[in-house]
Image 1 (cartoon, rainbow, N blue to C red):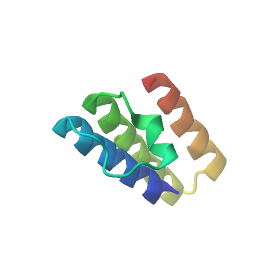
Image 2 (image 1 turned 60 degrees about the horizontal axis):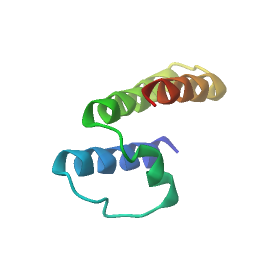
Image 3 (image 1 turned 120 degrees about the vertical axis):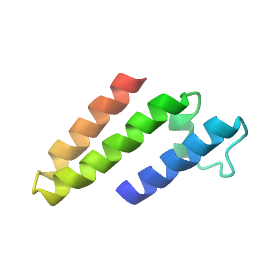
Length: 75
């Protein structure tokens, strides 16, 4: 799941920086439309933090809750 999320964020970030349209039109990509590059970069860092947390034995639920709170804060 984190791989897919990171790939979507990366594509949204590249699209945001290039000022063009996304090369894919998956419905979940709409979650990142309209966000600026700084916001997308912070969300990518949140995904990296989620990976580190999972490696250090933090529960999956806690990791997802933290990411969702950060996502909501970037909205």
